[in-house]
Length: 530
Image (cartoon, rainbow, N blue to C red; front, side, top):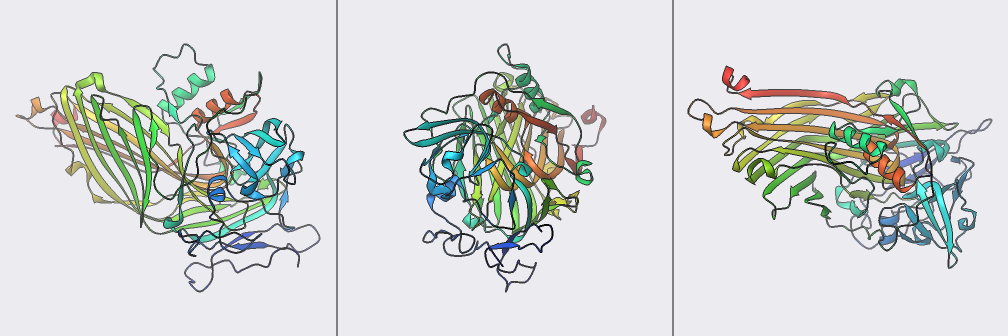
């Protein structure tokens, strides 16, 4: 058969077989020639040894600095049918001169095959992280400079079959910083918005309500039932933005990166058997906040079966993340000046975890969001708390339906709430952990995804009530989302619209599926309940 000789896709629990990706799409009147490429996550190259150079469709993942930063090359194979307006640029990451610090403007070697075919309105496909609808294109000193907007997964692939059954080696993940990620930090909805557009005001209100949104997430009824239906259209007006001046996308790195978010900082991290996000309010201010959210894993595993035919995701698609064993959080907050120090933020962390995938047109991506609001009363107030909960089961989508884990208590957060305050004090925080495989630009990645959202709240009663009783309370909410498409918040979409005024993209509100809601106040007496 034509194409690349394939290795067997791994069956769960069969250690003797190498893990595999499969991309296949039957052609009318002939038997489809599936493309399956080995994903060698446990090779020396993928785990930090000598960088490997991927062959076209097989061999170890390309761990060169360019591939880790810009993504993997497109794949040409009879089993994959791209949409007619997709322009494929050959050369892969080596053809990329640079990318802007917001990940939207890409400079490509003008001598590379396909570069001269890039046109306004076409879908550029240079690497897995340089895929999007061309909003602007210029020729500069013989190179092609293209600014890209979001595209749906099925705007790139007309016929394909994405299958995966693979353990993820956390040691092979690298950190990719996007310094000017659109919509990274949200101004609260009640902040002054005289200069804000209506879209930005709406996005801020959605953010304050912690409403995640998805652009054209699912194309079939069986999965669409898991999503609510408010739809709006982003309409283009005015001139296209110029390419970002000066700043460029920094190289991916194996060590963790701390993102500066104004008065806050955030640091995604990985360690053997764990993924986490730390975020804190800078200690120089009167307010001090530190939160450490972590997921303990045991053989983190991705299972995917996503058929695409005729530009439509077939019913019954699967993308599930398995192996998350527990979720934990540690919270510490203090305010020197009481209520005037209180703060709130909602942030899309501009640092993503990425993994090279050998010979495939996709990238593996982990991204994070968080929100936090403090309500500390009285000078020199402190609140601390921590807890851990077991998770049993996958998160994501299986056979077209959202699947959620069962939760159990390992360490009760109620037993840990403490601190000193002359008034009732509290803190609320939420974290989103999202796993996705696909293509796109950093702000709007397209492909199958699964996400876990955890919300926590703790309150500590006033020390003035201690002679009678000290009241403490906590809330816990857990939700799961999953689908195939572009998972992007209203905030990020509003920021993209501002940067790319000619962009047209439909926005569909996403509905998450809850799996736990718990609320408790102690002691169980009328004084605390009131």
